Image (cartoon, rainbow, N blue to C red; front, top):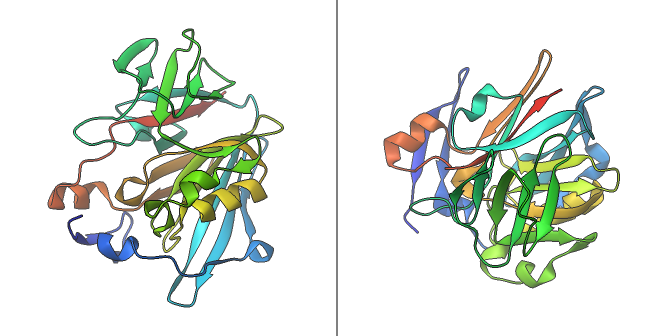
Length: 255
């Protein structure tokens, strides 16, 4: 993997530097401070928690847990204008295009692969499927990484060398009450796959899918006057150094 050092001006001011090689390093012990977690925002539609993550060999960081409450949001999949919606998050892994199925408003944009998991939606009640999904779904985004199934972390993938590397991660799942739970790294929130899945289980995720992490993580939420956004590498910086933005997003709008 090529080394990418990106110096960028963050939206609304300030700057930071990201080094992709530094983000993908062998694991050291994370301490996830659940007792110090804070409820950053709450409403009848969603909750947002900030979970501190500390590490003796890194600057402290945060992981965010977004709870999108049952039947409060209409979900779809898109490949354009993601930021115009109340919620968006990057989804499919990609190379020269998205990997796995992309289905938007009933139209197949990219064919599905064998296995993996599917985030699907025909409206207010999205569903997650493993290995296959019904033909009737109108919107679908596929990943090859299943993180949590029936409340149990997928330790088979957690044992892989690439899964033990610390980088920015993103997971979407459902809890027992059919709320959608999104867990994503914030600044300095470097996670292994097991790390982010453990946070998912702590916050009640029963089934969860992992989508493209690292420089791809791109999340936004607006609820009234509340705004929450995180990009691991800004759109401007991606263009400067030749990193393609994610091809596919899961989006939602409050009812």
